[in-house]
Length: 435
Ligand code: F3S
Figure 1: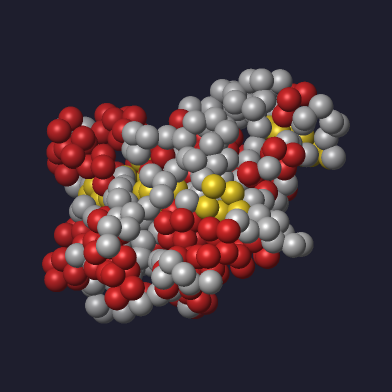
Figure 2: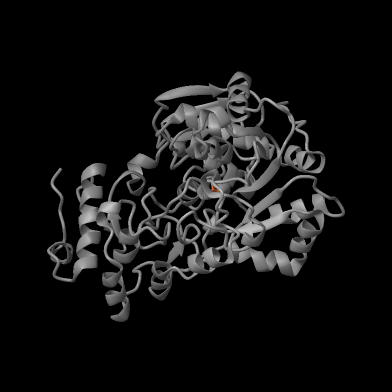
């Protein structure tokens, strides 16, 4: 496909505006080639990307001296830009790192709770320079819940993360692919492809269910099963209750774990689908699929793999907990004492809120640790000696064992509801089951 660039884009590509714009343009041109896009689109929404990556590809990384140079000259991101995850390698927690008794890759070096490592990570120069360019340091995979500034319907964005991109498309009605990077945010441009194009946003697969999907666990399991079935297609979900914000976070993350669902419709809930007819753009579904009892049970069993009912650790907060999640969790933990390590993950911008309202104290009194800005899968670690972990997230359950490639010594997962996980934290035993 012939790529049409504006005169300004051609000038940047030729290096007339300097090294950084040239590398960003080269990256975007390659993105167009891979995506089959014939042009770039100017973004009018928001962006986010994972620090410290300069782009989603290391081939376009530039020396830090070049970044320093443009920052000194007053360079800034073209669109409101948020940080997707904690800075630096091994993505350490922003808060709660002192309690983070994990050893990266299960070696003996407990980097995460080393003050010197934390200090170095938080003062990472790339991160400082991005901040000077205007990056807002949300450091959350669910930054859309703390940004206080969201794109509006139809705006073009460049976001990342499994729970976030469907939130942008299906919940806000804004438009994004999973392509947030330094290049897209700095230039305020991305390839014009996939979810930016109206035609690609219509549903193609009609999903039916046998039970009303209504609890948080049902939404999570359902999302994983739908993702496995839909793959990269746009599903239209029927037979569900109205999802809560937490359930949308879970659904989105789970669908992008089982598959790669950037967009979906729930008639009557998603902004572009007041009715089923709107969801399918007036056309008939290409196919119908049933995510029934058998499919839900299979998904639950795929995510739940443990030989023993003894639980060594509990982890909640994938995707990062919102403030209502924390309120409910505090209510459940008040006056109780956990028996095993219990980590709770949220966005850094909610830490002081949780502290001021009193949730942090309740968690600490119960023996649980509130952390922010990262997750176990991103850190690639659990505390030394942990063999069985209890989780309430399909995404975390799926990815966490990837951190432990040792076939003889695999991490095992008890996957279930948040209540199952709290019970495990209080008793050290797993009593969860699919009902
Ligand atoms: Fe976020 Fe980590 Fe889960 S990035 S969605 S908490 S796997």
